[in-house]
Amino acid sequence: MNPDALRGHLDALLLSVLEHEPLHGYAIIEALQERSGGALSVPTGTVYPALRKLERVGYLASEWATVGGRKRRTYRLTDSGRRQLDGERSAWREFTATISGVLRPSS
Amino acid sequence: MNPDALRGHLDALLLSVLEHEPLHGYAIIEALQERSGGALSVPTGTVYPALRKLERVGYLASEWATVGGRKRRTYRLTDSGRRQLDGERSAWREFTATISGVLRPSS
DNA sequence: GCCTACATGTAGACTGTCTATATGACGAAC
DNA sequence: GTTCGTCATATAGACAGTCTACATGTAGGC
Image 1 (cartoon, rainbow over the protein chains, first blue to last red):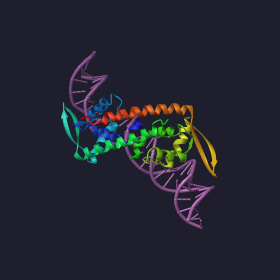
Image 2 (cartoon, protein in one colour):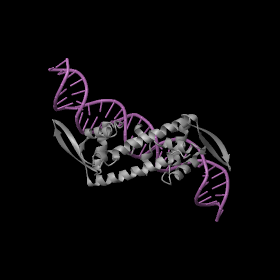
Image 3 (cartoon, rainbow over the protein chains, first blue to last red):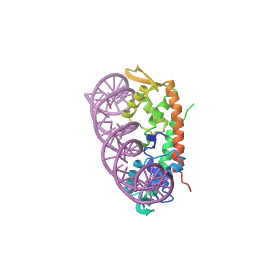
Image 4 (spheres, protein in one colour):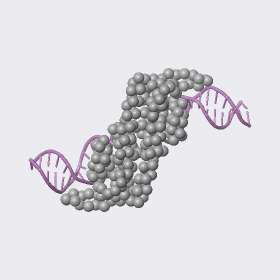
């Protein structure tokens, strides 16, 4: 998949995988791959800064944990993040409806 | 609509509005607005360079015309552009299926 | 004469994602 | 005992597509 297409939708994806359970960055990347049937492989250099930004604006909260000697920063959705996810979902529906409407062969 | 979301899909939109009839740049912008019910207003500074790029890579061909004293550069889809449009359409379907699959609230 | 719509174009800014690199712990293989 | 693959996080800087702002000019209405 053209990586450019992702632009503007990554936040929604990240919030979405955190909807039901807190996860750390590495696990989020795996979850995205799994949930997309392998189509999405977002590099670490994209995900980690994005998560930090989402925390900075209050959609996520994080805490450190050590599991098997390895340090993890586990993120969870805040209430604000939950509302944002709702917003992202409707924005996505609008977006696809708009583009699909123009793209649809009209013959 | 978040303008960032458009990124990576503009080419498809441009090719799509030219599918059934040649149009000049200004008319393409109007067609995009009309076909999207007003949701898409792509600025001229985005469209004109994009059209020139699509011509450069062979998906469009253009010729100048003068209508009512005004000069227009009218673009039409080439065969290569038609194939590309097909490709863009299936890429779009794949893309939406992938993102929707991840975004969909899983109960 | 002035304003709006029509019509095209370019330079440079902006910004979200990617590439490349760095660090380090763990477990298995050899 | 060291090397390799996986786990895990992080940052700096490159990249590229879109947008902003500006420039130019015609036509028609008031």
